[in-house]
Length: 255
Image 1 (cartoon, rainbow, N blue to C red):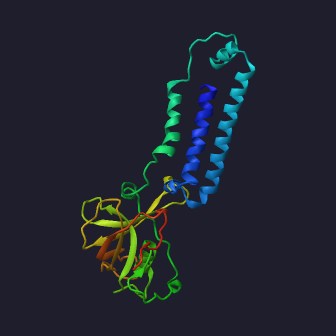
Image 2 (spheres, helix red, strand yellow):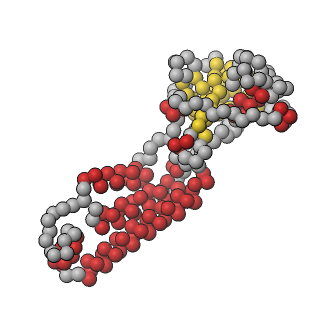
Image 3 (cartoon, rainbow, N blue to C red):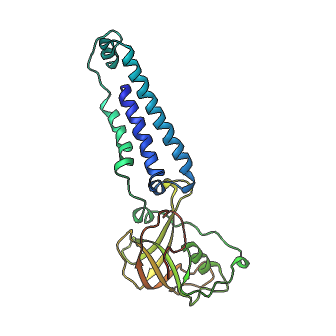
């Protein structure tokens, strides 16, 4: 690949990373928030390398006679231009760089979650459950709700109206749907899902972000692993996707 093309590719890659990290939250579709400083530093380095490569090539052309400059650009020190350009496959390297600038791949969603085994909720000491506040509806994360349903022997969630938020994942069998969150350990490649099955309301469109209020759906023995992490929905309200959707965060709505 010729040096001007190399310089342009480096610069575009650097600009793409800076666009996704400094001027938008696009990077949160692929990695955790804590990766931002490393991505910014990588973008700066790539941009600097591209600028240095371009400056070096321009300086070389200025020092050489026009004929030698033409020969150098052809990669032949003897002045013979054989017309060899970069391999056509090399131009494909521009696609990821340009995509960061002009078209970012969508965030992971229902397609991924439907093929992921739900993340196992860590076992919590029975005495570690704090009393629930009297707020109604009670905001909970999907993980907190699941732990309460399957591990809290005091059955504090029984009869309580809770509020949770996530995106819609259809059941693979076509019967029902799940309120879902994807959680990243590092990047999108290691995403794991946490799901709560929703009963009593028709499924909105897949990947729609919603806030759901309801009560625990009686199935199994509450406070034991046999209990289903399910909800008898009362209301389903469409909400905007949070800037960082790869966390099991509390509902981002005001009631």
